[in-house]
Length: 167
Image 1 (spheres, rainbow, N blue to C red):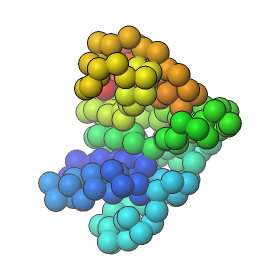
Image 2: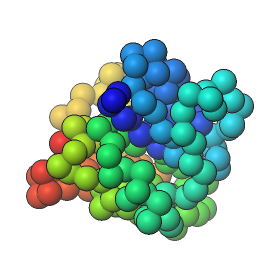
Image 3: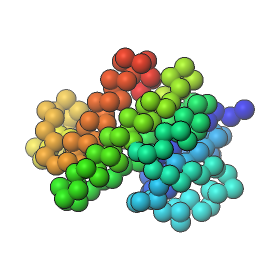
């Protein structure tokens, strides 16, 4: 049996291309996307090759546990990613970017999962003073979006340490 990869945000631009690549490499692929920013058009060509689950990661933990129980790799690309709307709707961004990440961490099987890959954001460093920005630069999130991505990253790193999830 092929190794199983789950991609959250798999109907987005990056997620759909990742799905293509993983399928070419022989992986079994499942996509989770609520289609709030992703589009079915990005993955129409994959529907006979992948399992697609349409639901909100921040709300549906029962479905997550079932899907993630036998996953070998989890690529968490799903998020709301825009600075200006995050200022107007910080709670929506917290739910989408932090609660969803927490739900994934609590639903995966650390004994089976070989790697949890989290798509972080350079926005957590604030307004860039150097390009490219080094990963050892100081953390200085300026907007709710940046803060929610940083909190998600910290959750992943903490769960890795405490619960032995390979991330």
